[in-house]
Length: 189
Image 1 (cartoon, rainbow, N blue to C red):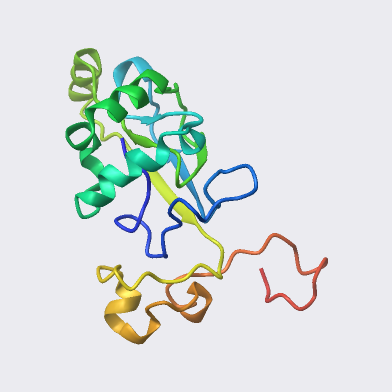
Image 2 (image 1 turned 60 degrees about the vertical axis):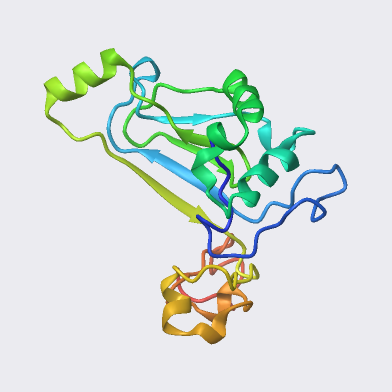
């Protein structure tokens, strides 16, 4: 499993210490994982999530194991078998129809679920690709991480490092929570 840290998100990561009053990591974005093909939990290939993992007492230690590796996010099983076992015990997968979505904080531990033998056989027999799509939303005030050198916005304009996403609207379109009727100062939606 992994969390979406600087390896996946271009913004500055909120590590332990940047928490709300309940001790949870600050919410600096959400993932929307959308099934575009039918997915059956018993076949694998979908998204496995560990509900509540973003708020466990050991989340900082699990993230610390990832960070110590140089942000090799997807190797938690190898880097910290103890935490990987805890996450596996929390694992949830879902049957999903095209258009169904899972919305979760970027700090919720999650991973692509391994295919089962039955799933492999069915998907190979169908000859159809298994489609899914992810969208990430983060506050426009989130700051671009200077470590996100893979990010096209920073490749084009290195001076954006440390600046808010709203300073690069050509790369990070804004999404508003109100319609024009509620706030005429917002651009056309």
